[in-house]
Amino acid sequence: LTDTRVWDDAKFREAFLPRQSPTRIVHRYWPAPVTVLGRQPHAVVARCRDGMIDTITLLFLDSGTHFGYVPKSQAQQTEAENSQAFQALFAQVSTGVRSETERLASGPAQSLSLGREPMLSQAVSLFRCGNVIARLHSIEEQLVKVVLFRDEATARNWFDPEELERKGSDRAKTYARAVINQPNGDTLLDDIPVLPQGDRAYCGVSSLAMAMQSLGLSLDTEDYAAAAGIRYGSTRGSHIRETYEAAASEAGFRLSRATRYDHDKVIASIDAGLPVLVWRRWTQERDYLHSMFLRKLAKDPESRLPEPDATDRASWPDKDAYNHSSVITGYNTERREVIFSESWSEMVRNRRMRPEEMEGTAYYTFLLRL
Image (cartoon, rainbow, N blue to C red; front, side, top):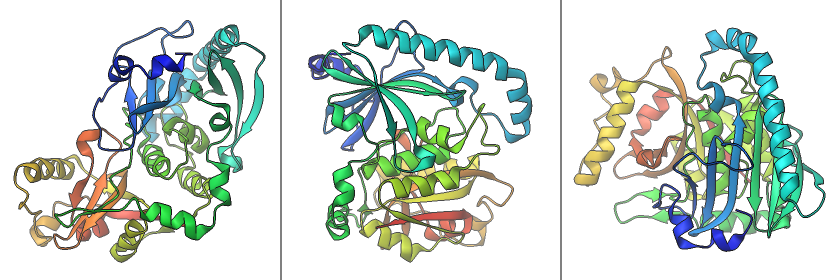
């Protein structure tokens, strides 16, 4: 892993899954348990850009992965019963990973503070290992990971500092060029990477990472979870909305939050090349309908969603439903559809919903602007 010639070997790249993705940026996962730096990580993730491996992340410890999804009602008990053991585990993993990384390094570590925004700031260590740079992240009771980079300049920032110096109008043109107008009438941002949340209370931060990585901000789901304070598997007492604001600011955007879904504003955002984050109410039954329609549409392009009449509205999630976060990636005016993706897998990319249903079930809409 410390030799980029291995990264560039086609057989090595193809071992990561999924092998196919429509996006320029895609996260691929090593499919089997493996020992790295003396222990088995939760995950080994290759972040690929234009088909080539850009970075490799070794996720050794993540609170959400360790505990899985914990309902808010069980959060206090989970922390009380597990805090001592988890603190000991964190100390063991962080010490062991640092020791093994130091052993591989050709010189002493460089200490670095990542991030301009206080909420996203992390104290990390950089090591030269072979011909790659290893960046060690260690956040107490939360996260231990090593990210491998091809060059030191990229490892030193969450976001390209030169991009922040560009004129807003020039940046706007770059983002607008990402908009695709399909023959079927879809207006689409089809370059949003899917970052699976897994069995973790991470839909809010996974969808944030998906949207912001498409715009050049390199934080991963686990970084946002740590910033938001999603501890011991629960969002209880977390600060996810504030993390959204910090992420936008880190990348030089402003963020507005509305309690009412405005389809015209969403269209304007997509036309500008900027994905929209939406928090909405969710039920398994309605989710099944969206999944089935996506399959039906693949077989019959003339298929249409149900009209949003009284019968259809009766099955929409209400205020007692689960809360969920999605990324709006496009729209189709003629078909009257909002196009959105989930933080689950490639199987739930570019699903469809009537604007009326999105308006009726969304309780927060987050819009970016330069």
